[in-house]
Length: 265
Image (cartoon, rainbow, N blue to C red; front, side):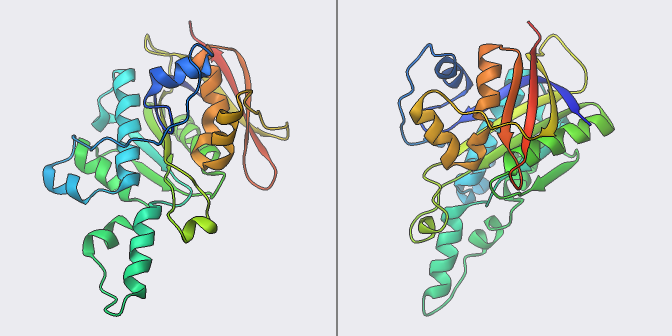
């Protein structure tokens, strides 16, 4: 069984990739990839009080979600959403562990509320007024592929438009020794059931066993293998190049998700 949708907008933010136009130029080979620490913009869409409470995960997820929706010309509050992350906010987790290890063991209410896995989805709803269906999931290193399959399944069932947001942030030491995610990376796809003037490509996904795609640039390949959300890079590469063909992405237990790309141009 395969699942399909149309890509109408893309958002990207990661090391050396500040947005989709910059990432597209790198993935096309028009610009050399220069790794650099991810700079997370403040979520200006949130009210000031909520903005002060946000951590790295929320800043990352909102940035790529807004970019994808904006490039699709979609009203954010009208979109159903699927948020997918392998582990949530590593920095917030570190601070909670540090507080629990301290003599007083006093936990900040803000840090506690930001520790839940659906924090980014909640802030997105606050920021945009979205009242549509919102799904939040985690599948460890397979979270991007799981999120993509969930998004396409919802589109197949319900039609309409949907926003897929996949994101991961780094862990400080000593957690990094057990979960060595080096930096933040996020991506978002604005997806629709039907083709429209905004459509960039049609994608169709199914499970398979083909070897996963690797990136020719060594630094980009290192990015792909070190941050779970960056497993999306083979798909993003085909979308950037408007190149027809399959992108093979790691999924669960040695399986692969094969995403066939058919450009609309």
